[in-house]
Length: 126
Image (cartoon, rainbow, N blue to C red; front, side):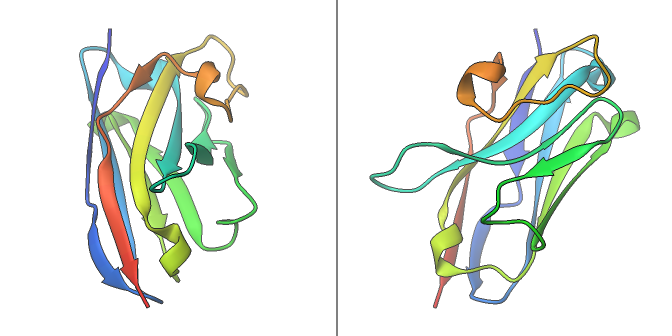
């Protein structure tokens, strides 16, 4: 079992930046692939970014070039740096994790992950 807690959400004006954190407890985080997802009001949850055990990254087209996912295994934490934020980035952001033996593996759908955090609200005003 691993528990995930997100932090760093808040309100920001368009063009601004936020850094979200996903802190894990219960297990060593290094063996897990981690993803960030978001859900806006009235919309389905969508994939944002993912990072493999070895730090390979993958992004949704909508955030590519603006967001960066990274991990610090010593701190059991994954980060999502969000720059050039737009009003359409407004959503609840959640991190998710799944243990894997494969260094290059990552997931981009809800079903690829076993553990989820509660989410943190990000609001971008125009």
